[in-house]
Image 1: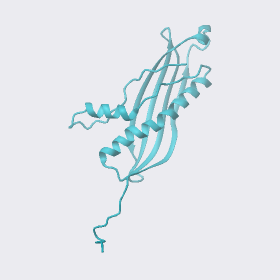
Image 2: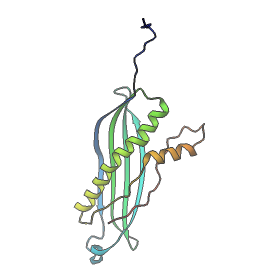
Image 3: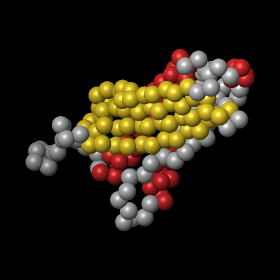
Image 4: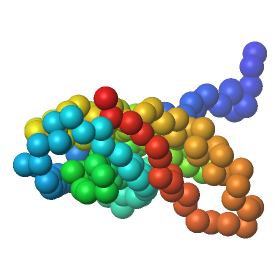
Length: 168
């Protein structure tokens, strides 16, 4: 007969998505009346910052916030600018601290990014401009690259740098 004291339950790591939401957004249009705007191929600048905030209300719950600032210029003049914070609340149970950071900064950011891209495109389109198609970003790969560049004694949280993109 097996020793029941040595038989421990297999606790698997678990990730729960509580909600995904737009935390804040703003759209600014400039030079909308210029006739060349309709045919302009703007230069897009995309800046991304990724942050994770532990929630004190419940243990193992985190608010993950992906901040996008997207600016479009034509011949050096500002056409439009979008600032957006796409967020999610996630509960993680059974992860090691290193794996938890990886999930929050990689997997969760990968989950939020398509929502953020869709909202940016919607805001720009509602502002009277064409659809915006932001290039895909693999946050898991970016997180791995940033972790490999950090020294073992560094405790700073990495953020994603400026990303190139295009408008179709």
